[in-house]
Length: 338
Image 1 (cartoon, rainbow, N blue to C red):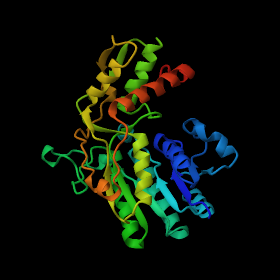
Image 2: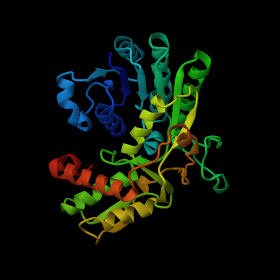
Image 3: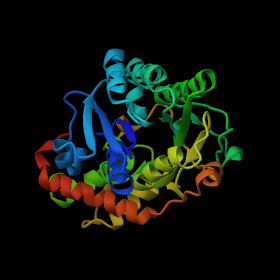
Image 4: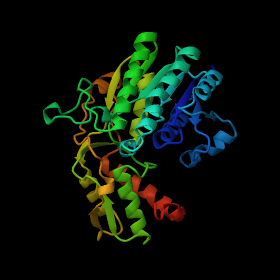
């Protein structure tokens, strides 16, 4: 029997790389990873040998801002499953690049789904939205379910509302098998340092090696976040498309451990090799507006798939810190003065 093909946009990112590793280990899918020219391959270094030998995985070069390259990639590979993860994914950056953010996240999704509609209309498609679409949620609406009103707090969140609605539109208008996820905070090894908890871990790793002074710079420490592990997230994404998929549906996915951003920082300091670390507010790390109550109701997705997180908060944070320790040890010059 011929292997099913899984197409991953954003394979070189944190989530895409973990998803590729998960599918290689737990399925017999043939994986096609979409990557932009000149993108770093560091996150998929564990797959380099398989890629070079074309053993169940290959890379295709395309850009969400380029319709021709997207259509070519889909037409030539004709995947059975599509995991659309690529995005401009930093809310803070989006305040400075709103047009770029909407082009990549909204128009880019349209370009991809148009290509799928033309060449693989029966494929199963995961469109990755975000919990940021809910934005400024009132306390009486917690925990947040899928019917909660959208109240975006950044251009990124606005772009993800567009992504969300584009997915539903293509499902309803063209009878395509598209499912959308609104993933809450998910982190772990390879998390970009423009996210708070990863920035904390990176700074601690640099302090431990005496590359910077024992001061951690931070933004808003009072926002509530519900933490999930990226390795649980990718397992959820696989279940989304393989366990009774329902076209046009949207699902909240998230962890079970809720805390303030400041609590994350405090825990990372307690497991560091230097507990005499000071904290200092850096106003440049503050957003003009913040989505500060992120607590999900994941009942709908659990009823559909029986998915539950397996990694606990402490393990996720330990693995995140260990990732940065190795990264700073092996590549210190890449991170000094960044």
